[in-house]
Image 1: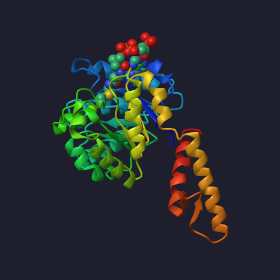
Image 2: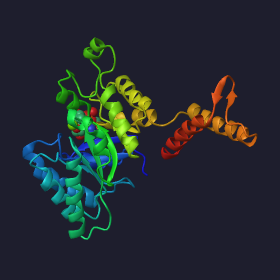
Image 3: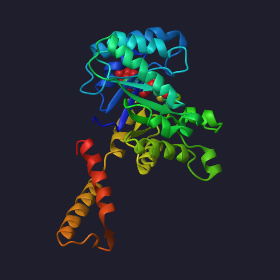
Amino acid sequence: MHPERSVLSVPGGRPELFEKALRSDADLVFLDLEDSVVETAKAEARRNVVRAVNELDWRGRPRAVRINAVDSPYCYRDLMDLLEGAGNRIDLIIVPKVERPEQVHALDILLDQLEAAGGIGHRVQLEVQLETASGILHAGSIAGACERLRALVFGPGDYAASVGMPMSAIGMEDEWDAAYGAPRLQYPMHQLLVAARAYGLRAIDGPYADYRDNEGLRRAARRARALGYDGKWCIHPAQIPIVNEVFTPTEAEIAWAKEVLKAYHEAERQRRGALAIGSTMIDAASVRMAESTLSRARAAGR
Ligand code: 1VU
Ligand code: MG
């Protein structure tokens, strides 16, 4: 599957940014119809997005659009216009503020019908954002709700608002993390990760609002990577190289993973399931850890 370390969001109301975004090194680019588009500009943004899905060169990436939330007044028209206007070319729809599995079922049924009616020869995939208390509470049943799903995406800003957590800017630490004594988003991020992995889905972190604060972005990205996340959203092209780097295993990690596999397979030939490299014990679990690192490296083209 196409890698998804960096995911660049581009407001659907700013078509002058589309080509620039598609020429970037972002693994995935999506055109946004939701929060970066004001209500009075939704219809125009839909037209921009349909044209871009049909006409622009996405450079081998899935053609992706974020629609409005299922319980908003815009979702139905977003889907109709996208599938009727660009159904043969749209690959991936990102759905914000998913709160319950029934919402995914409803989208699945509607997409089945739009695909059949339009003679669309492929199944459009879905990524869903969990960014409310209800979304995190129902993470497991949402993750298992339909076969179109390929990733769960955490939304730090909307989540903070939903649970009443004070947060001065989206995805950024502030004095309240110090007051709490730990990074406060660890719980929902872990919930989302476990739900995603239980159903074989990717786990993607949301954005970091300050696009000039490289160190803060790196810290936030490394925290997500440390938990096991596959990638992170970017809101500005300047964030892409940092995010790609953080979510690519380092040379040292790759070398260690290869050493573990080599040593384990040598021990296996001698019918031993546990061995030591230096003073570090290696067994079948270490092999699974090493394979996970190498498969992540392969996905990143290393
Ligand atoms: O150098 P140039 O003039 O050719 O280009 C500018 C700028 O236009 C471009 N750029 C982008 N290109 C593609 N995609 C982007 N997202 C993007 N952002 C900027 O890069 C060059 C430098 O830009 P800048 O430093 O002058 O930045 P601006 O003041 O133009 O823009 C800053 C904002 C934050 C407004 C812009 O980056 C933006 O709109 N980002 C995306 C916002 C978004 O999509 N929000 C919704 C998803 S996040 C969410 O839902 C919250 C959880
Ligand atoms: Mg949001």
